[in-house]
Structure formats: structure tokens, C-alpha cells
Length: 637
Image (cartoon, rainbow, N blue to C red; front, side, top):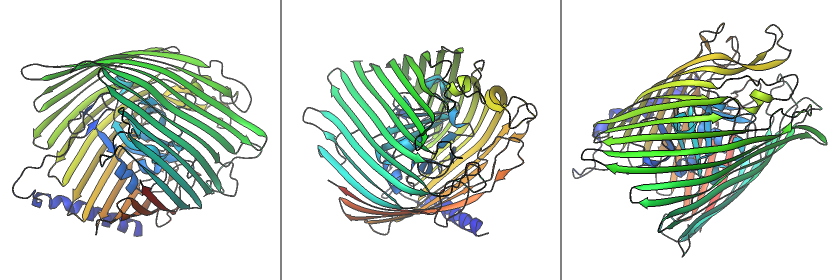
């Protein structure tokens, strides 16, 4: 009852702003024009967030700074449409997915570069520190027509700090942050950015984070070892760019090295060293005012070495090298603006290492090439976006995907949108060639395929009130599932096959309102029905998929120096087996953040995540973080 009281009270307060939205006036009868937000992720080019034809969410620096989260999964879990699953706390194996799809069906990029492991198909989120992030763009729904494989549920593009002139116009600036946490740990981060006399924009940053952690697993979990699971990570990021008479040159990168302790049955490995890097080098050539071409070279590395003292465990590595060439041309007719974009993309994925059995992969590399094109038209209040892409994979052959979307401004500030897209996911190296004889891969797997539909409405009712609502459906076929070779022998050999069909339908709604200069609130609901449509499982819920999530946030700024933020999250029960005979309980967590500016360049932050120490799991047998405290000081220069 206490959980429901807290949740209901927060929502009542947050939504009360909607009834009073029409009472807000801009003063003196003037019209207020809100700033235009530009995103690059959905269409692989700059476009207006307000007129997007698909659902897009942007998390900016201020939202990251105000959050009580210490890592990326904790930050993303409150966003509608995002499901976060973790095998414990800081540093643990964690994943995120969009709109009920699997983590490997959600494409995660770092500055537009694929960051996923080619063996597991997921991203080491522990290797992406919040201190390095400038913003996060989340594009939901099928986007394979723009990005190819894995974008069935959508795209999460993490943009690191890009540099340039400081917010106050200075040529150079920076900051240093130091903090302590409970469970006991600490961190220090620093960063500088600016523009040199020659016009070179730069950003450099680094962070070190360490924590004693806590015991991730429950005593009933397989491999449980009593004692805390610690985590260490060092990271560095950079970005360089320069505008020239003929265009622009740029480069950026993010590197992280970490060590994590986890639970496993002796003598199996219970520690891992990880190395991750994502980076690119590019140039843009401006042929004319409305025509430009881009060439980018990119690389991504993902290594994990597992061990227990001198005992060696699994050792896996991914190398991905890619090239992207595109050209964009816009032109205007009497009644419309037209934008054409076309390009080619190619990359090679290679893997190294072996399983604990020391048997190597049968194949260690594959090539992918693609050609794509997009056409957009802006006709007064109507925007139309379309895309077509053909991918050729060296392992399974070709896949053609396409999408089309439209948005229409019904009245000032009220925009309706609709979109349809197809998608696919290529099997990972583990799916195809996993070398363990007890769980061998299946080289005959076909790619997963999807069809996604969405209709939505965005309403900027006033300068202070906004609402976004979306209805969607995603049909997935040939979904890869690992199952026992002998259905009656759960403890026998397992292998993957294209056996699943899934239909996911859902509703997302997000409302924000500023009552006054001191008070503001946000609330969101995420209702979803992720159903298995496979033979023998028809009508069952997909395992570990969110079915209902609700969040509310209240901000109070009594002075210019002090800001107080409270957040509540309710997560409904998740099923942990395909027959839906077992499930994890629902849960309610509450977070609090206090920010105090000592002066214009100094700030204290105190935050508590999971204030009431709610005991819950997002993965069976693994404790989610309990009450977590963070106290830090930031000095800008």
C-alpha cells in the first residue's frame, strides 16, 4: 500500500499541471517561439525534433547532471519505451532495449559508430561513463532503412562531448568533479573544451571510477559467492573538428578499461578485464550551399578476458572497421523543399578468443556492404520521410529494408505523425559459431525480420506544457531463440534456431509542465503487450519484457542556487520463463537529487537512488542496486 501511495501521489501532482495549462500566459500578449531542437540520429542527417516522423527522445547534459544515476542503465531506465536489465550493480553485465525487443535488436551507437560486441550482440554499457556524454538521442521504431542490422526496436545514439566555444563565449573552459558514493566508492573526472586561434574545436576528458560494490546474487542463484562485487574503470574521450572554406574535418573517440568482479561456481572465472573503444575520422565537402558529401572511417573494439586468479576463463574480442560515404542534396520548388540523401557503407567484423573449452570459432570474420537512399519533402505543414536500403552480409546473403513516415502540423504546436518500417537483425557470431560443444552455434540461421507501425501526437500546448503520445506495433519473425536440442532434456545440449514469432503492441505518453519559476513536473506511462506468437507459446508474454512502467518527477528551485528533484518509478512484474509460470515482483523506487551552486563556478551535488532501499530484481537471481548515495563537488574554470 505504501508503494502505491507514493506512486499515486507523485502522479497526481505531476498531472495536475495539465488542467491549468491554459492559464499560462507569455506576458503582454506576445507570441513565444520555442527554440528548434535539431537531431541527427533518425535520418542520419540534421532534422527538426519537433517535426520528426517517428518517436525521438533527447537526453541533454542538464538532465544527466540532475539525475541520481551513477551509470548509463540507471539513467535510461526511466525513459518511456526503454527496458533496462542488469545482473547486479555498477559494472555488472547490463543491457537496454527499446519497445519490448531484445537488447541485440536495439542498435547502440557511440557518436554514430556501432559499439556492440560481434559475439554477444550487446554493448558493454559499463564502458560508457556519464561524465563523457553530451547528449543521448533515442529513435524508437524500425530504422534499418537508415542503419541496417539490429535497428528493429530502434537506436540509442550516445554523443560524447564535441567541444567548441564555451557557453559563455570563452575560447577555453573546463571542469573537475570529485565524488564519493555508498556502497563505498569514489570517482574523479575532468574535461576541457574550446576553440584555438586557428579555429580548431576540441574537447578532452577523462574519468576514474571505483566502488567496493555489494553482493550481486541471491543465495539461491547459480554460482552465488558471498561478498561484494567490486568495479574499477578508467576512461578517456576526445573530439577534434575544424571548419574550412570547403567543408569540415572531424574526429572523435571514447576508450574505457574496466575490471569487474562477479559470482561464479569455483573454479570458473569470477573476474573480467574489459577494453572498449569507439572512434571515427571524417570529412565533409561542401560542393555548394545546398549540396555536401561526407566520408567517414570508423572502428570499434570490444575485448573481455575472464579469469579467477591464475585460472583462465572465456576470452573474447571484437574488431569492427568501417567506411561510410554519403552525399546530400536539397532543392526547392515553388511549393516544397526536397532533400535527397544517398550513400554506401561497408564494414568488416572479426572476432578472436575462445570459450573456456579452448575451442576457437569456425569462422572469425565477415563482411557487410550496403547501399541506401532517402527522400524527404517539406510541404508547408506536411513532412514526409522515406528510405530504402539493401544490405549484403557475407554469411547469409542480402536483406532489403524500407520505411516511410509523415508528420503534419494540425495547428500551431500540435503535430500528428505516422510511420511504417521494416527491419532485420543479422545473427551474431555466438548464434552462428559459438565454439562450446555443449552449446554450439547454428551456421544455418536466417536473419530476424520485422515490420513496425506507429502513430503519434506531439502537442506544445504552451511554452510551459508539452505532451507526446504514441501507439505502436512491431511484428518480428524468425526471432532467434536458444533451446535444448532435446526439448525434454533441459540440462542437455542447447542450440539456437529461428523458432520464435513475436508481436509487441504498446502505448507511450509523456507530459511535462512548469507551474512557475520554482515548480515543474514530468510524468510518463509505458503500457506494452509483448506476446509470443510461436507454436506452443502463442499468447505467452516474452520473458523479461516490461509490460507496464510509470515515472513521475517533481522539481523545486526555491532560489537561483538550489534545485531539488524527486523521482518515482513503478515497474510491473516481468515473466522469467517462456511458459509464464514464474515472474519477478513489481517494484517502486524513489530517487532524490539536490544541486547547490556555491558560486557561478562551483556546485555541490547530493543524490540518493532508491531512497527506500527497495529489494527487487530485473534479472532472476540478481539483486538490483539498493539505496545508493552520491556526494560530489564540481569546479568549473
